[in-house]
Length: 116
Length: 118
Image (cartoon, rainbow over all chains, first blue to last red; front, side):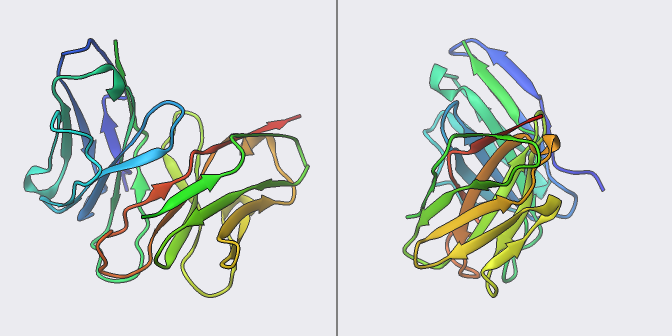
């Protein structure tokens, strides 16, 4: 079974440009989460999809960030326009449908975004 | 609101020595507790978790952690480390209420880099 994949692994862009990060969750996982780690800081929650619906986007830093999950499969996170403080590692995680109790979140390797 | 504090940003140890990575949390609701490990160029991998029951939790690769509710701590331990344990370790919490508003959202600590020297 393939794990969570993220593309690209690294991205270097200039301030003001647009970047789109992609996450492919484990097949069949309804829950998809985005997290971000800014250098020297903790990993922080950005948002959570259940299938194609945004369940919680309380962690999105501002309206320059747009996340989508069309069809409830892969997800994209677009940053437009990028600012220096957007640099960091963006992680995606997925878990099965959350009926009750606990389901492990499986993390991808992350996308390292550098804004210059 | 929840918060997690990992008390050590870096922990150097020699191979075969014991190690303890410290984690304290605060939360207004009951929580699930986790330790994740990230090896270089890889994603986060779940090391162990506390959901309920016995406060001593055993995980993969010989790691264990003890949940102490009164001290709001969840320290990670291993009696004898190997070179291959060199990695960054993250303590995390989520709400334990099924169907609650957080839906499994994780709150992480700052991470502890464990370096095992030969």
